[in-house]
Amino acid sequence: MNILNLLTESLMDNKKLIIGLYILFIIFFVLAWVLSGSIMEGAMAKIPASNATAPGMSGDDVVDIFIHNAWGGVVSYVASIFFGIPAVLILIYNGINLGFFGQMFDQLVPNGGLKFIVYLIPHGIFEITATVIQSAAGVLLFLFIWRFIKAWRSSETDGASDAFEKTKKILIQSLVLMVFATVLILIAAPIEAYFSVPFSEFIVGT
Image (cartoon, rainbow, N blue to C red):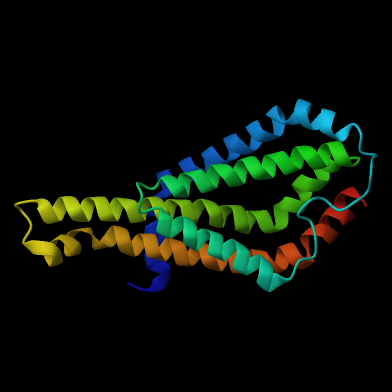
C-alpha cells in the first residue's frame, strides 16, 4: 500500500472522530468569542480604537511559527498516552484561545472581528485542520495502547508480538495522521507569515 492510499484509509477510517473533533473546536471557538464579549467590552473601553495589527497577526519568522506549532503538536501527541485527554484539551484550548483573541480584536479596532476571521482563513484552513488531526492522532495513540494491552492479556493472543500484529493498524494510522498534520503545519507557516495579514488588509482594509 502506497503512502497516499495509507493516508486516505487513515482519514476515512477515522472520519467520524476527525469530524467530531472539528465540531468540538468550532463549538469552543464560538462560545469563547460570544461569552467573552461583555468582559472584553469592559476591559477594552479604556483603550482607544486603533488600526493596529491583530494579536498574533504579525510577520513572524516561518521557522519559528512552524517549530512552535509542530512542537506543540508533538507534546500533545506524546502526552495523549494518558487516556487521550491532552489531545482533546489542547484542541479545546486552541478553540477558546482563538475565540478570545477574535473577540478582543473585535473590540480593539474597527471591523476587528471580520479582519481576524479573514486573517485566519488562508493559513487556518491548514493549521486548524492540522490541530484537529493531531488530536485525532493522539486519541488513536491511546486507543492503540489500550487495545494492545487488552489483546496481550487475552487468552486468545499468543504473546506481545501477536497482540501487536492485531493492533498495529491503529498505531500506523495514528503515526500517518501525525505526519500529515505536520505537513499541513509546514504549509500553513509561510502562509501565516507572509500572506494572511496582507490578505486580510486587502479584503477588509487596514
